[in-house]
Image 1 (tube, rainbow, N blue to C red):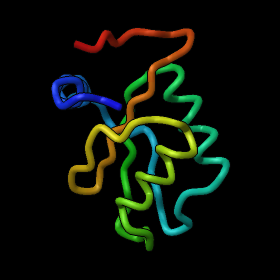
Image 2 (tube, rainbow, N blue to C red):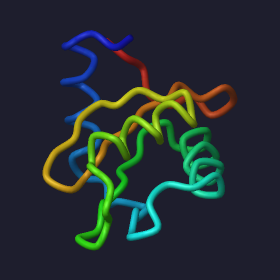
Image 3 (cartoon, rainbow, N blue to C red):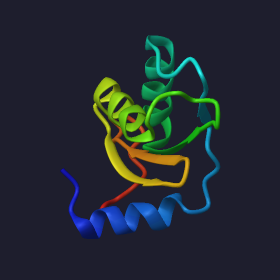
Image 4 (cartoon, rainbow, N blue to C red):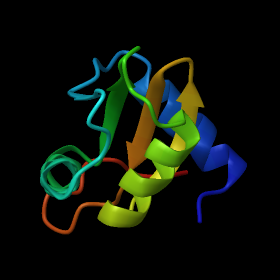
Length: 96
């Protein structure tokens, strides 16, 4: 689990990132979870955008992605989810 201080730090790191995934009306599927997992392994910190036509609740979408990829939800703001997962091979972010 991340502490409040770590989440604050990660939010500041994520601020300038652009979302690299979009969840649309089909919601979250296995393929998307696989791709998000690979992106997290490369980048550690990513943003996922939830489109207007997504029928699922954004909290549920965030939970599904986090559980599927074993990542942490850093923040949900508007229609953007920020996810963090420590990388096995490409460790770049040093948490306070």
